[in-house]
Amino acid sequence: MAELSDEELCQKVANGDHEAFELLVERHQARAYRLACSILGSESDARDVSQDAFIRLYESANRFDGRSRFSTWFYRVLVNLCIDHKRRDRWWRRLVPLSDPADDPDAPAIDPASLEPGPEVAAMLGQSALKLGAALEHLSPNQRIAVLLQAQEGLSSREIAEVLKCSENTARVHIHRGLTQLRKILKDE
Amino acid sequence: MSATHPETDLVPFFRGELSAAERDRVQHHLDECEQCRESMGALANTMQRVAAHLDELPTPEWNAYRREVRLKLAAHSEPRSRWWRPGVAWVSLATAAVGVAALLLVLSMRPAPHGTTPEVDQLAMEEQAEPVDVGLLRNYAVVEKLDLLENYDVIEQLDELPAAQHNHDTRS
Image 1: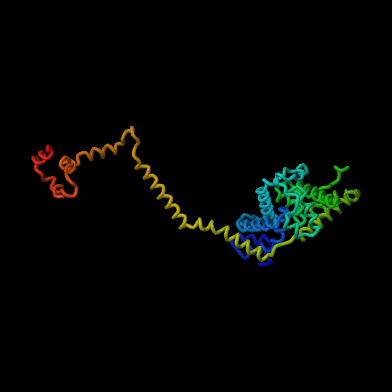
Image 2 (image 1 turned 90 degrees about the vertical axis):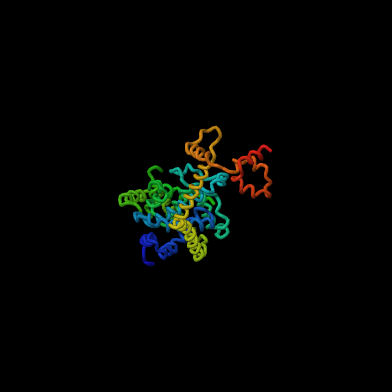
């Protein structure tokens, strides 16, 4: 079964195959966790939300129609859960000054995150990684997700557009502005 | 001029996402624009740093992580399967039906408020009850004078008492 593609495994999961599900979790656990960690800035939240994404995958595998790559579909589920998680925390984040939404070509559907990485993550990261993590926090949520999906998952602009539910040109703008801002922040420090 | 620089196409260009026509257009621009060449190198470098940063993030112990996923999955699916089990569903429906029936019964037995016109059924019952003969009430004057425990015999013979004695006792 290990030689099967993600899409084939997902088809088996839709038919109730637990072994296929375990294999998909094993393949995507690290990337799902890291992506959630980078978006949410908290190790425990990332653990919780990424696990929820796998539960969602198990329950809605039959809705994966195979028109897009499995990873595009799965990371859309994960990103949406991260967005929902952030929405639930909105009340306290209103007190924190956030990145300028004017730099975002689309009205972001995602609430901005806090400006600092979570203490659990910060404690375990080196200085360089910590600096880049903090710089990522300065990006608008859509820019951050676009950059992370491209850097980590290698998703194309079109696939990122699918995840963020925007046009491909807009996804390209998110990536370009996100990377440009990161470069500027890292150069200034 | 900044407007003519294909800024947002630079990342798709070095990632090989562009169509042949777009690639030629960007390549032609890059051949002549040092600023964009530098910019593209810097963007590629930043992308690599982000990828390296993600690799450095601490990760949990994966066996424990997957165990938690299994537990969550079991907890998530269990209540729903229990709820929709046919036996449970029928018992729930039957309980609800009994509850509704009891409620209707209680409501139907509530006395009508004063001043309202009695129902036709209620009048029929009252007419039927009137002719019923109650021995104790007919001889109420005798019964009234009896001590409870001492006069059981009299009570038992009440219907056989002669009318005269009855009238005498009533007068005295």
